Length: 625
Image 1 (tube, helix red, strand yellow):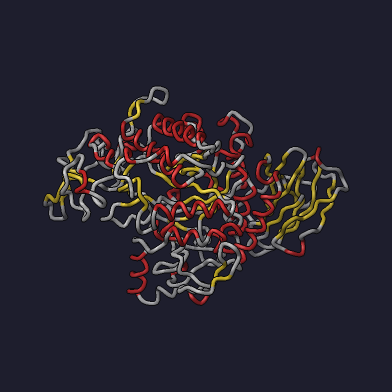
Image 2 (image 1 turned 90 degrees about the vertical axis):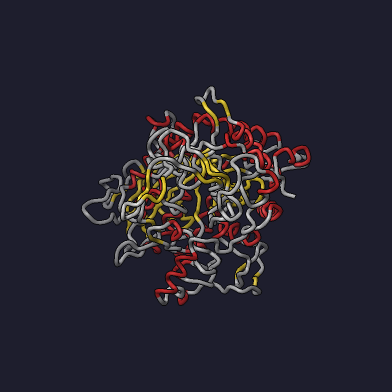
């Protein structure tokens, strides 16, 4: 039975027994993020199961190139495909459980799962961020027991599980009765009022019933609202749970962005005060109990905390302390709390230092610089300097950034791109072939500082693009909203070249400590072996160059390099650490997109201290040691 109130939760029973231990170091992990609704419905065939066995039963065949655009043949079909993307399309927890082997063989060692909590029944919040019941799993996704089974199977395969959670808001569970900010139609007739933030509370018409109508009193409503109306557990039905200050219209004005509603989602009043003297509200204390429940019930390994920018620092600090202490009581000494902290590196650094959150996600300049370095539109130094700004962090670069930042480039909303959202593989202009370069982006992500996070579908070359988030959220299992404008075809293809090559790179990352924890240096290069300098973009076009960097751990240097030219070979002399190498020494190629280079050797010469000459094929990547 799903608890209706926190008073019904048997914490003593939940906390008995052994729990899966935390990893020693989260920088050793590779994250993989998926929206549950868009990942797997468990009906696929022609894929490999968790134990490596072929699956021939099922309904949905594997995607083939000829299937591209099979859902877009007519304007009506195009509209149907688009409309499907705004609704639940059928991904489930049991489907996810059956694809964990696919992720393990790719090299993912931790998964970040989108919120699975019960959503407001009168909405299509397939993404999971509109919670109506914090103590239950949405039936579109499955059951609480199926969440527990996903985590248990992941642990069996050596994969940690981070669950996406929300503290800042609930779903659209009540309706305002606004009395200001008139809304008029084209003829000037009054049609209603706009409840937007101005620092003053609004009256409330009532909690919404199961059909979405505000027919219930705004206060404790009891059994009449169970299970699909109002908000649960019952502790959240107190009117004081909510700020009731209306929607945010200025997303950069403080306190508006902290106090206002996130679109139609309803802001939770978390408390008052500064970080050092914060007074948590009953709602925040209840949220802490909710998420303690999920840690124990499902044996989770971490949380990704949504919209940290919109919370008081004191609230985030209080929650972080409570959850860390509870997890430690279960033997989870390194339970990881990753905060979505938008607004740049300085805000991220200050927020982490103030709140005690373990790592930041959402630092918009990291995905921007990474993506466009690989495509040749950013100077490499712009990306690498993000990890060595000692004036900002007041520490050596590799100390803070190594395990305090989750790095990614494709993601589910791409706030940084405004109304021009596009996955990496989308070709913005005629003649581009970004699918040839995506492995380089994934390799750069995997072999530079931070905890790398792969967004689902990137390893299959998904190219969604448009002016709506749904274009970035294609259904991996096909259904009515499959990738590449398709339907009815799944993409769990372990023979896909990007998947295969990324798996090899991630295997090397697991093997070599330097690739996970080493200091990081962008290396000067030279075409003639005499004049060295960092690669730089010149003129109006993209930079076509070899870009190289070192990871150094103790006395071990590993050299990584990529070619930003998707059409032509590039070669250059690359600087090495002078003290770690001797002239005449040989580096061995551990990996290359040119199989003929693997196990080959390159001689170290006395140039610019020490240097080695590398050659990479078009859109190539290699690792030497």
